[in-house]
Image (cartoon, rainbow, N blue to C red; front, side, top):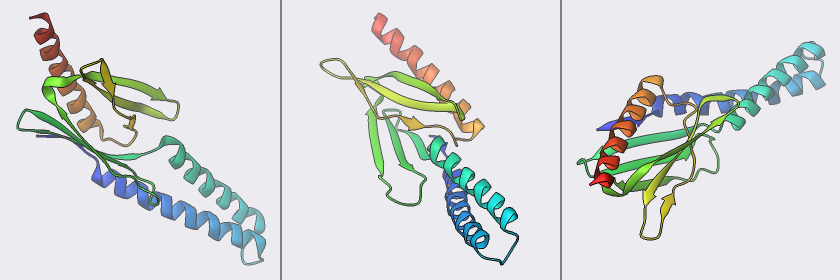
Length: 159
């Protein structure tokens, strides 16, 4: 069962990175020449640069979550920035899944999530993953599943 897959949103964000970068460079060039009005070109250059900076600040990530055979939680993630990507894949056995931690970002309503697992010594923590471009429907399905799974985990701890 696939809980989250934001492939389409990542493609749009990658295109946004590329277009905002190219627009800012083009308009900065136009503002230095007499091709267009210098002030208008500079305004467009600043707007496209601010869009690019906003995309960098919210740290959009590809985020794929799947439950495989009701035994493992598979998580695939990478940054949506077109260059220098690091692909990460985590496979968490559901019997060692403890929960999630969340934190908010000023620019994103959904924030970040980190998965917690039970280890021999204590609780292991996976890296933070941005939920900024996860669709609302997938986000709600993910929250529902985590809450349902945590209730099962808490019942097992009580026994």
